[in-house]
Length: 261
Length: 295
Image (tube, rainbow over all chains, first blue to last red; front, side, top):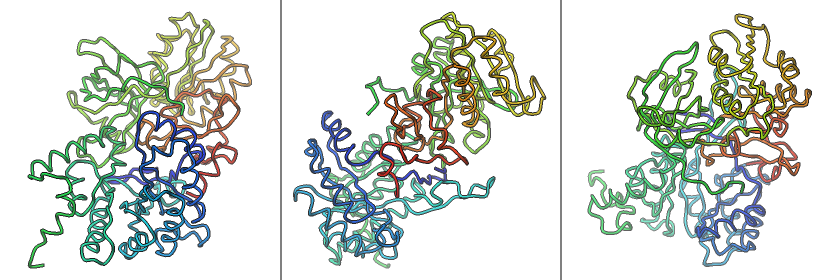
């Protein structure tokens, strides 16, 4: 881990003992406390994603799961390590295989990487393959060099950049995909906005660009109450601006473009 | 899941009421209502740095140097800061009456022996910060307390004078011989354990030092309890930055979070072999190692 301006770089990876342990212990505990779980899954091959989804479905606590987020920002071992989220065919294959393993009433969200030439193309591939929604955005690939030792500062050499530093990238990515939906270039599905949200105003930017829900990640490390605080601040901001319903604000910025543009 | 249900950990705006230089370090006292009352030796606090709009998002974690639950201004918490990066320099530069957001107490404290056995407390640099109130807690139980303070140079020692009040015997080492014995804490530790018939060695300082005092303690038949200094981003168990491999009572190595499962571990349970070259890694035989590989 390395701290960066308004953010952090991590090569922590996906720490955890694996899906069997999660399905038998953590998910059972989450259910016992009444949590509704959007579980994020990952794999090294497309088939492994499907296996992970099948293990979750077989869990005695699967009814606590309200949705699955498919984290496709992993290197595909079967394709020279190219990240699934950077290749429309690989991304579609993962989504299709996961979709087959889960009941139709469990929505699946494809979590997209911003490190692509055309994020709309990846979004289209995922939605056409059966994704019910999109999560945008995953971390950006970054790197920090320790200038005392003159070597990469994180063990994985490169790492994922997160925090408020990447918020403009999240707003841009959500904007582009939402615009494609509004123009009928891809089917319309809900977008979960994530990336650099620290305040209610930050969340409102992502919502106005087209996000129907918000995740708060890195800001939690600075303020553990951030998710609850952001929710309250966003509600207050929407009320201040006269929105009767949250959904009226989703994508609102697309209707307020400068006509001279 | 190893967590037990706990009272909510306080998050407070702590007012800095005293700041002073101590050798190479800064000693800060905050009014932190609710934190002092709950804290035990070995626990730490996580401080936000740079104010509300700071570009430095990550909290800085400091082991608690001491607490006064019923000071003139309410409960106070003391920490010792080495001004080395942007966050710690900001903290060191604060004047009295500035507010700093504080979460704590966090982590598991040093376990105390049930019997009044002799103990050796070893601090490397300002790693000695939590050892003085640990010494007080041990002496309250009738334990004989020896302290060993070591650092590269005299100005990087912390609390030599305080140690003479807090412990029954004090040994000082410096790498350059500018104070005390020239050498490392691990050079003098065997003698101190033997002389005091110590059964427990407590340590706080850099990883390499903790590893060597664990090895010395084992060779001398004592138990080592060490407070690790893994880098942390949140301090509250969310970010997984501070995971490290530790052997459980069942002999299985697991990746555990040093912020919530530590920072104090039995030295012989820590997989020191995973910390070579300063990059922690997941040992092949750790529980779930296969699931963590490749991501």
